[in-house]
Image (tube, rainbow, N blue to C red):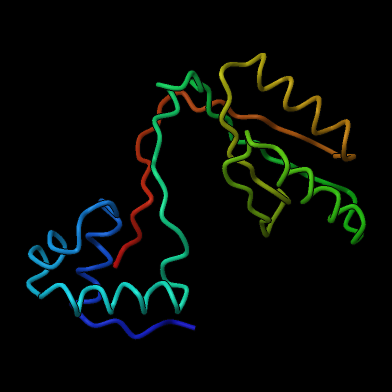
Length: 153
């Protein structure tokens, strides 16, 4: 269900996406409102699930996580037990930043962040020891061209 947002809602959400640590006073000033209506709207965004959480965005390279792999997975197994084990394995692996089930020839795509190719191999060996996988293709990102958490409002 899509929430109905007015222009002020969108401006507040845009400010929060850029920097959620801004004070209410700063946000209110930037969006042309007063503090109380801004606070009420932010509370409504949280209560309705539009804002799911607030977090800090870290620089992976500054933390030694220099390699980003996109992992394409094809499986010949589609039973509920296999899927449960596979999804649990993905949830337990901190290297997996994103996981998507796809339509088409590839069943799943993962975004995996690790220090280097050896660390990826450790991840890969652990994953295939937990769950049977028909085919895995790992693609190393040579350059990150765009990465954002900002949704188009």
